[in-house]
Image 1 (cartoon, rainbow, N blue to C red):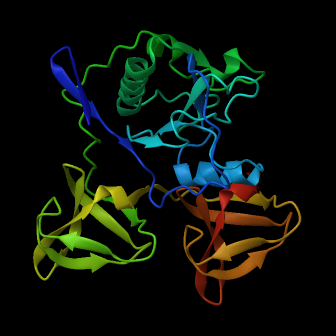
Image 2 (image 1 turned 60 degrees about the vertical axis):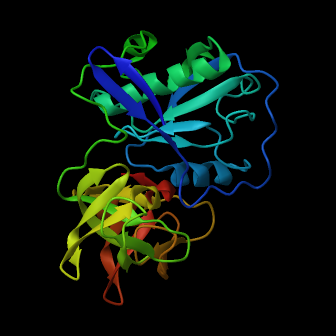
Length: 313
């Protein structure tokens, strides 16, 4: 972990690798030079690095085009290798590092959260410390796009000064009720008696199961549920935050040819229950991390579809 001091507070961030790891179709080409950083946004408030990787694979690319992604809660994710050619700004990838911010800063007037802004400042300073005084640009500066959006705090970011906070820890302490999904590849995740691998294993939680977090300590989450009457801790590295909304809305299915799979949960790791036809209209009653739960049930079971393949109507 790299640490920086700023005006009475310590700002700490780490760069995390997505779990499960992103699988590329082939190895990205090594970049010959690094002269600039190009900043983007997802145009999506809940997408994960895995979601963006899947979108870019669907574009026919070898995998995610960005080198780094910064969540709204301040988590920094590694995408393509830092020294490889990206796929984020056509005609400008051979000498640039691409950073994408989670969020919609074109048609959403909400301010960038302090945690995300400070993570961006930290990451840019970190990259300049590694590669020299890199030029800082927006996607719109090099292409015909509005990205990263008219509400993106570009002028403030160019100053590269951390926003005032009492502290900006490795990740923000979640509120009681914060939900996470277990993202281990195959096996359950160990639950330990304390925040670290030096503590005894007191149980396990299943892959893709969801849990409520009540405390964060040194990269470990304490779960609300008890294990044999004892508090249980899990490693944050094998979790994904679950973002939930409950306002219903209508969507049209926009798959190109085939119907869209309906799954038993919010992710591709869940069982396919049924399909819904292309161009059909559906009602979404809940969203979680880029997935929508349909109003219809399927043999009495709740069904989920990827919102990537829908258009809101």
